[in-house]
Structures are given as structure tokens and as C-alpha cells.
Length: 172
Image 1 (spheres, rainbow, N blue to C red):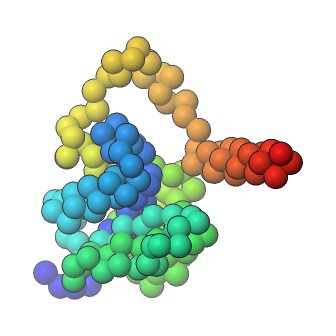
Image 2: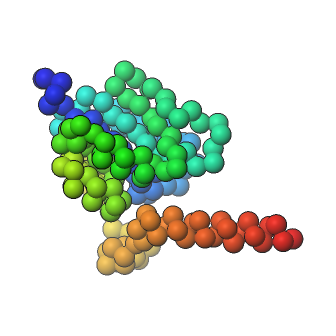
């Protein structure tokens, strides 16, 4: 298949691991390893020339910014965030129509659609591995599950709580 017709899959790593009941319970490093292993053997819905798995670098000093796992598989630890990196990648791509973006983040999806990139939801990605999502055994209705916070709101809350915690810690 001609190289020009093959896509680059760009995966919002933490977005995927946090949507998986099995991976969200694991330590972050273990969830990253399992997602990476899964994606290296994933059967994509379009021909893929390379996969870029993107995670937030955060405050981690022990992570290399880019790790080449195989000839066609990369893991990137982005700063200031994976979201910002993915959006910039979409905006600066000379052929965004050959990007396949995997996320449920609304802002990234909006950027992808505006630039003509293909999108795949985390549930579509995970369904091939874990099967269709099962109804919650904890009695949470599907209607309540639809009303989750956006990733932007989650980041804002996390930042605010971090600042409050740091203030309390320094005033002791």
C-alpha cells in the first residue's frame, strides 16, 4: 500500500487508560505498559504506518520525552500536556486527513474534526480488547455515566486542589 494512504495513529494514553475499568485500577506505569503492548498488536480500522502513544509528562523527571519502542511505534511524554501536544500535532500536520486520533477529549476531537483528521473513540479501541462495556455492577445508571466532567474541568479541579494542598502544607 502506498505510504501516502497510510495513517498515523495518535493515542491519548491517559485518556484511554482512565476509560478502562481494568487499567484505571493499575499503577500508572503498569497501565502505560499494558496499553503500549496492546496497541503494538492492535488491528486498526485503517492502514497505519506508525503509532504515537502520548502521555502527560507531568512532574516526572525519570521519563524520556520520546521512546521508540519499535520501528513504527513511539511513546511520547509531552509537556505541558498530552492534549496540547496532540492538538499542536494536528494543527501543524501537512496532511491531517491521514491522522487517526484516539481520544474522548472534546477539545482534541474538535481540533481533529476542524482539520479533517479521522477520530476513534476510546470505547471503540477498548471494545476490541475487553469486549463491549458491561453495565455497571455498582448500580450507576447509564444516564449518570453520561454526565462526567470534561478533561479540561478535571485538569482545572486537579490544579486547584493541588494548589490548596500545597498552601496547607507550607502553612504548617
